[in-house]
Length: 359
Image (cartoon, rainbow, N blue to C red; front, side, top):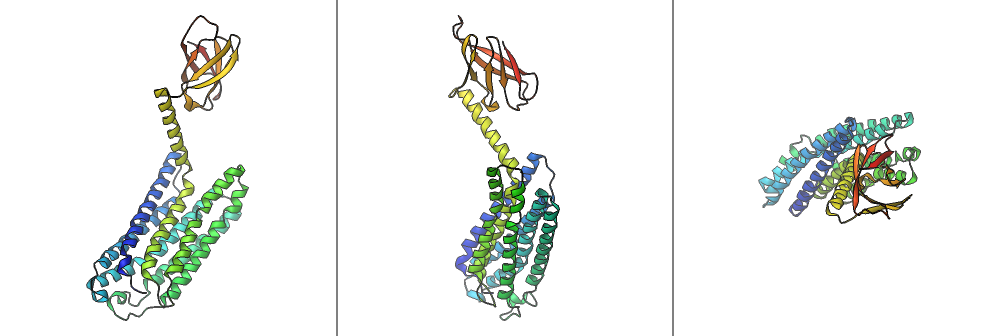
């Protein structure tokens, strides 16, 4: 494993902080979405939380090493170099559980969504293979050098052909992630959804393709030779790769959060419109006394009105659970009165059918 160039320290700092923060926010939003939906947290949620904790610990060790790297003034003879090398070696084994548990979380989420016996069996096989990959990679990474401390204390440590080991494990990971990406496509096709909804759902899952792209870039720029790799570039792209993997694993869980956010935005927008009087929505229909205009002061209900006669009307207010709404209604054309009258609408039969009287 070649040493990290000092000039790479700012880039490693940047990717560490940015993707550490993004993944943390992603996990927080995931649990927030569960609370909004009042759904219980499953194993997929707890495993992604565990992966995030491991990732943050790894980042802490990595950035502690990079801090020492920034202080090196005398090359490999500098005491800061040993500090840097020690922390870089120690944080290495954390990569395998961080990315492995993230992938297991994705598979557990699949099992939660798609409950067919065939899919449950196949996804279980994937989980077992991913767990074996994670355990094997972690154990070997710990014992890359014998003893491990020789990597930062000895000028000629006894180590395995790390480049070959690393490349083999990264290619296996890449293969598993490609298979995971296409695994739910057939199940999505079976869902009773419109074509557009199916495209949206499939697109959310396919966002995991970003993880595959970062994995390919990481392999391309980090691998050096059978003995070692470019540790500077590997550290940088490890931050990007794990961070994006955690974010991508959380994205499919955000629907309740997004729906609630849009509802609040629409409600606020409707309130702002009504309070400023900058927009009035007119719904016209015919009555026995002539044309009557309803000025809708509760646009958020998406209501529509049909006036039956001069004194009675009905309002279709969708699935609103409000029991009383007020509207300003002009007097019918041809009457002797001017201005508008306040109308109260009370729920009378069914969630979508309302009757009312002029007040």
